[in-house]
Image 1: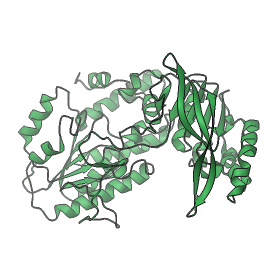
Image 2 (image 1 turned 135 degrees about the vertical axis):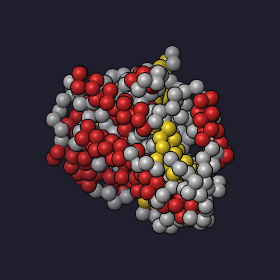
Image 3 (image 1 turned 60 degrees about the vertical axis):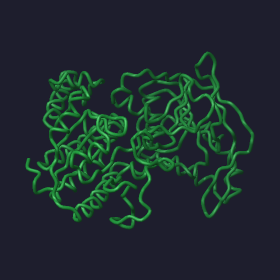
Image 4 (image 1 turned 120 degrees about the horizontal axis):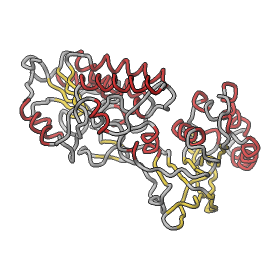
Length: 435
């Protein structure tokens, strides 16, 4: 592929934001090299969607294949990027890349800094989701899911994990620990329909009665919260697991307690609600109690990787406060010249696949504006090849991915499964003839 009359862009991360961002830039005429930490492209669309949503996932994979078929896009998978990786941002600039779009998602782990987070049985949601979706190395790590599990959070991720715990891990009880009340839950009816059949109704009614005074104190009718959750019953999946699901509203975790390094209890603090500028806030009362549990999973959002090599503010990479190439009034520019951010790298845990796709595309539009101020460039192919070779890890190309998909499809057919995924990078590399 000739680079003498093209701009040259590196896109880091091949989830929806990176893939569709790469397509946008390539369609504008630039040469794009798409670098990915994982072997497969797809990111959370491949490793974050609940395992049985086969039609949705295959529809997305079809779109991703279309992106990778673009002749202006090269793909290098199984490559670690960042300050401590095979290639740093400085390395890429030195090889001739004029712009870099960072779309690596939010790969950092967001903890609350509570005592007991290091106990066996205490996990972050992202790690658990990666585990049951077969993303190496999480797929081969040991997770302990006891009979009673607490999931801290009230979004779709909480629902997915609770569903996995009840239907696949076959636990006895899952407790959703919710900081505020039923009116502030963030999961959708479409997701909750998969879990609602396991809701322990007597306990739900009792819990709603317990928190009703706090709801009415700020003008929230308890019935509104009740309906917000129970509306999912109309399309509920058939009940196929015996375990029970329940809520613990107006509660914030304060510490995990254990014996011999293993979790035994979750301590929570009771909250009250208040209204501030029209927003419902939760405030601790100082009253604490414990719940006997074997597992606690924090589904409280994510943050970017602090070791990547870009400045960080809170959970996100720092964006330029005075962008030169804003899109719809939003800054996609980092504080480094020519380095842009998109998707969850710009705004952590914001939206699902469609939102990531749009954000990656908008980030690419910002990159395209920047490229208009520059002439063409050439890639130092030898320097790139030398760096990749020095890593000692096989580099996965677009053609390799096609081989892997064919092998996994054949394996699924043999086993009578809708889908089959290899659990380790070694197995995938071997299947592609690279191991």
